[in-house]
Length: 139
Image (cartoon, rainbow, N blue to C red; front, side, top):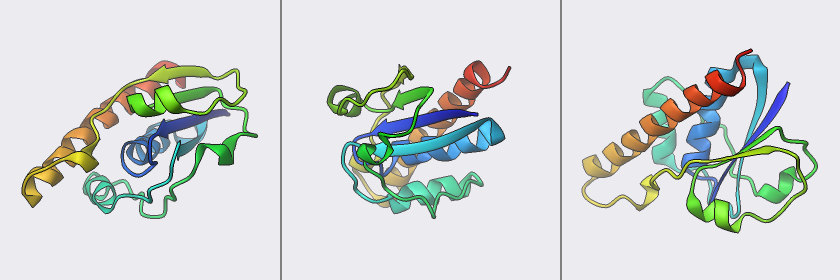
């Protein structure tokens, strides 16, 4: 069983969405974790847009990367440039991947424009997660 860690700045949106989709697509092929270099709590709009796509992340927690320093990860995926550049070092032989997704929490505009930005980022992360599982977990 593979161990995958998804890292973001605050573990509130992008990494939470990626964790949800990676769990969905990987099934029993991997243990999926997400963390941030800070913890901001799970964003309610991230929960909303995932629920719209049939994935429940409402029980996810916002975790700090230091909580997982004793886990031997096979893959570490950073989903924002800030996490890639500022992630504290922890010893691992994990293969590292990086994909910078826009931060939907920084979206501006009216309520519809903001939620549509969350949906746009959700869809980008969904496709990335599906491809990642197909390339790295399907034998």
